[in-house]
Image (cartoon, rainbow, N blue to C red; front, side, top):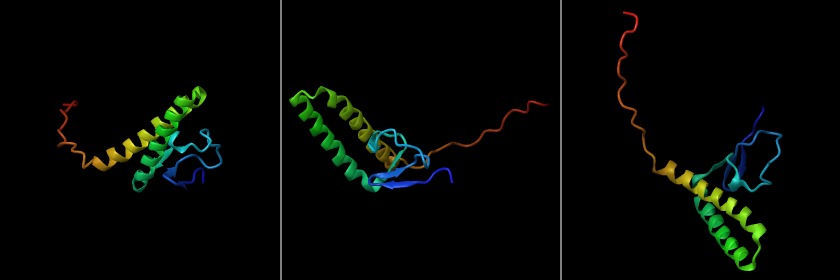
Length: 105
């Protein structure tokens, strides 16, 4: 088996089995995280905590920390958005197929 789903606190990791985590387990940054809709509240908590940590870093002048925290914040907001867009979606109306003109006639 070349991959195994890994259950993590806020969803499922789709990283290939045996490969290193390039985000050092900062999962909200990773495009391979498949967020669990049941964990939306936890993602909101993570986002709010990141906002608090960014404010603290700005107050304290920890400029090196701010960029990494903002990347994580963007990831958390993206995961929340993925959950929200999936929840608000309904059936996709594709319309009726139309016959093609006969090209061999």
